[in-house]
Image 1 (cartoon, rainbow, N blue to C red):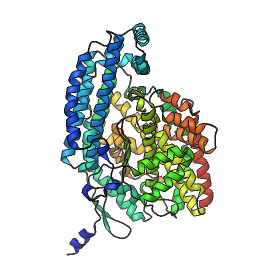
Image 2 (cartoon, helix red, strand yellow):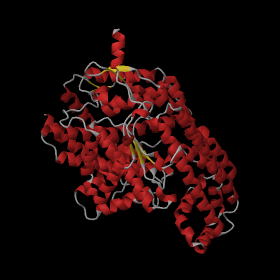
Image 3 (cartoon, rainbow, N blue to C red):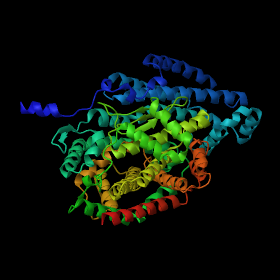
Image 4 (tube, one colour):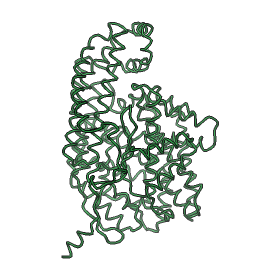
Length: 607
């Protein structure tokens, strides 16, 4: 009888059907129904056949080249809409077999589209520079594709023959397997069980609640959540190591096939980012690790513990006078915080809040975390798992930064340049966070609230600039291991990750053995050499937000020009519009100095 009573108290997530529709994104703005999606999927197969008619004709005339490039855009846009809709339907409930099947079919169709379009790059590269210039003179409409063509020429040494490009496109579906397997395991199959919260109520431990539990002021709750979560991952350590190893080997295979010296070189070349930017980030953060050690020491002192453990890293150092925030309160705070970006920006925020852009709350089977995504020609979408914490207020500001970046780019750029590169993708989102924290600090009611907010901002630095750089260093090491012929096992992955934690957090931190499994729960490791851009983007955002808050003449207009740039320029040049040069190292150095300034202020308050 007692067991049944305890079971009845377990708080479970609602099903998808139990959610209020006003809190769900409106995917019907993309497709009115699943049937409409099915019709377009059938049309896409016909479109694929039609696109093959252009093969072998791109060099025949300027008119042929223009027609082929327009058809290529139409093909890719149609595929983008199909893929986004199917994926987001699946992400609503990853246990839904129907939408899992739809997503799988979209993935297969995407591979077919890439295969069908694989002749475009090789045919472009067969044209001489003189012939291309002649075509551009003969056909003025081709001018819009000049940068597209020039980017292909820049990568000429890494584009293969038509036959090999076709093989690589076909291999793309197999190449997605490690990421797909991990995603299914992590989001649909892996269960963590339950823990007791501060009130003794048994609750299901989920991805969405994990950090919430780590923010608990009850150390027993934090500890139980930490050990319970990593026990679940550790039970599958060898399977997870094999899956991740397959992903790393896959990246090296594609890099070598395309004549790159390493997977990292291949990943960075997509946005024309020098390898030196990556290494410079790691070196600069290493030179400021003493500031992290100060932070750890302050945290240990403020929490009044003899030894600081890994599960003590997220609990606020000061009480939160603001409590939790309803979703409506979160929206109002975000609008007020981002007011320096102008009335037009705030109006767009309101549009997103009110018109089905956002999927707000967690439900059973829903993909964990948060993201912004969408397809050209319709509004962006934001997935959240809102839980009322200050962290999720900032997540709302963050993801709407992505969404409005996409909105501005889509509005200004043609389809071929609307998508912005990952290197600049985190700038708008983090700039929003920096503006919001400034607003909240300005309106702090007392010293305690100010301490809480400074602590939050420092934790953003810790999580984004320090931790993501540690992730980036981990990736650099393990990809190099595979390149050097070493195998990736659970043991050497865990040991490498554990040693990095020791280096980044210092001797005042008890590096719990369980943390060695953290590499196994980071989805971004399946999109290699992505995470360093969180750190570089954060640094650029601190620079831009500082300029906005200082009232630098014309900076808001320059910033919106940056937001509207898409991929029409190199990322390094886009940031230079705002006066930020990421090749010089200054933005990372200056961001770390801002961290040290806020750290000093919190040390004075806490002391």
